[in-house]
Length: 85
Image 1 (spheres, rainbow, N blue to C red):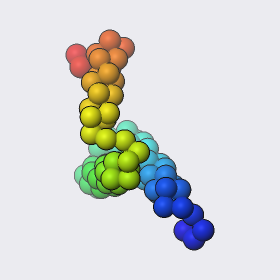
Image 2 (image 1 turned 30 degrees about the horizontal axis):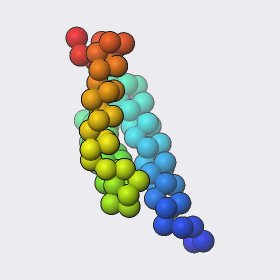
Image 3 (image 1 turned 180 degrees about the vertical axis):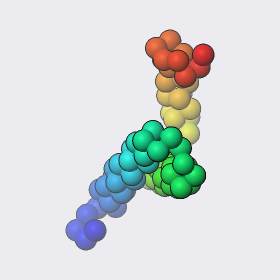
């Protein structure tokens, strides 16, 4: 990725990895969680988490901000979804 700033490259790779995670989630639904796709899902989750860690290292966010947002999101999910039933 020539002629990109480091930040631009981080954002692009993160977007690509998020797209791959979206695709892996879709395959989990379509295949009813076959082992091959569970393993792929795990890989893609790891790739996204890696990019989040890189974003933290470069100062785009920090652990405290992420944890705060995670709590807020969990509260919304408790109110509006069946995830926490």
